[in-house]
Image (cartoon, rainbow, N blue to C red; front, top):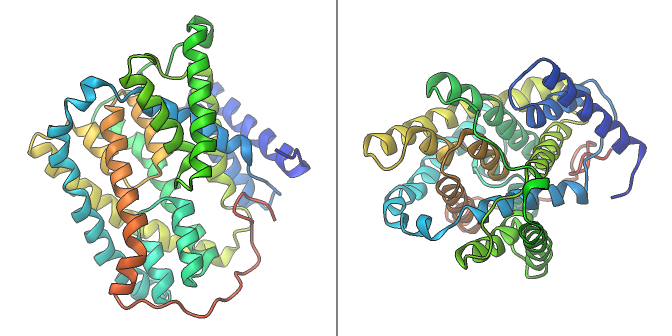
Amino acid sequence: MVFTRARATTLAVAGAGTASFLLLDLPLPFLFGPMAACLVAALAGVRLQGAGVVGKAARTVLGVAVGAAITPALLGELSVMAASLALIPLYVLVIGVIGVPFFRRVAGFDPVTAYYAAMPGGFQDMIVFGEEAGANVRVLSLIHATRVLTIVTLAPVIITQFYGVPFANPIGAPAATMPPLELALMVAAAVIGWKGGERIGLFGATILGPMILAAALSLGDVLHMRPPREALYAAQFFIGLGVGVHYVGVTVRELRHVVAIGAAFVVVLAALAAAFTEIIVLTDLAPPVDAFLAYAPGGQAEMAVLAIIAGADLGYVVAHHLARLVLVITGAPVAARLMGIRPRPRVPAPPGPHRDGRR
């Protein structure tokens, strides 16, 4: 990671946000502190920059945490989980049927931009597919950043206030109390999984690569613990920082139109997620918090963090997010063609931040 002035400013702002949340005893200080501080700074016009390779490395921690949660006992629950997973295609279909007309008629987006704005896939994946199809990349970035930001902000409120579940689950053991061999295995799974995943073109390699290796070690009775507390705090910090930095360069006009439209669509997504959560709970397929986090259309990394802190079934939650992401990523280009959505001529995006927050 090149240590630029903008990056140093970003780390200082994020650190101040974390410290403020800790002093005020606010929830999830290592996630919401940097996210809130960077968001405010970005909207105020402060020059910020994403954490680059360090931010990617932080996401590998969550991959290892998820993989370590995949145990033989979890595999024994797959038959029960299958019924819940079977609803994911219907969930994505309903989102698309409602979302595309919403962005076409309410927001006035062109067909390609409307389609990729509606799809609840991974942030970067939807930007890449949308760019290749000729969508407005700046608009897509703001829509999906708003989706993730809003869901991550509201989810803890819903979990604590509506479901009555406190964020009191220990996030992890201190590194000093963990066997050196376990720590070494986690580091190896993180690095080899990440770089190996990138080499073979695995989407979401920073999370999925380490997850696959850690899961193999867990199922082989070699890895028995998830990453230490310090590593999970660091992962939260850089994930929160990254969400806030996405708003660098936002104009007043974009706030009034694009961001407002994105926030309105989140309300639609929240209603759909609530409906599917209720179906899961009423059919006794999963506990309420597990079902809610599994169907909340936020980022995979962010929902994994909340699942850990809320004490939810991490394997169940991540399995559903993976199913949604795989379905959207593999099916989006095909579905777009079937719907008659054709790429428009490529138009350079308006001046704005680079994908990692650079101007």
